[in-house]
Length: 229
Picture 1 (cartoon, rainbow, N blue to C red):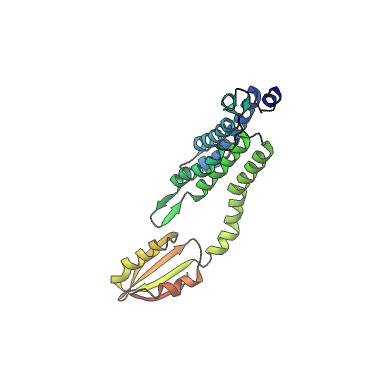
Picture 2: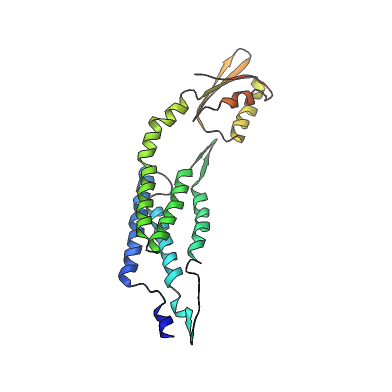
């Protein structure tokens, strides 16, 4: 019995402080980038998510020692039983960070960042500091340097020919706008002009989609759809 009791893992107060402090620091670091870009889930939200994940993990693994030992028997339990639910539960918080703004959707990166922060908190709570540090470093790389690099390379290449022009009958303008909303196309700029008996709609999208013009020409009232400046 004494051997079984000795084999039950415990956590010293100093190690507990170290794990929670690491989660707090790494969560804050990932939240600063979102805060600087004025996103809804910023510094404090990411810090709390990471810290909460770490606390859940520590409690799941070490918080029920007294209840696992009773009489002459040691009850076996899964130390990940609570931590495993974080992966599912964080989805609700992430969904709250996603906002639909007209025809655009914002917050996907923030939601993904919260998911990563929760994983880093679990790693800190489990004492897996290497995974937490590497994960946080890679997440910061994706949020900052890679975003800047993408803006100067991939995004610029995608946006070169991202103007789609539609000549439509006046009565069909509303229907075309509804179609863009239904397709959830990300519109950066929209302009409408009168061209004789028709209306010319010019949409500046975040990226070109060669098949989109042919698809839109099938709508009632659309005379022509083409990509151009």
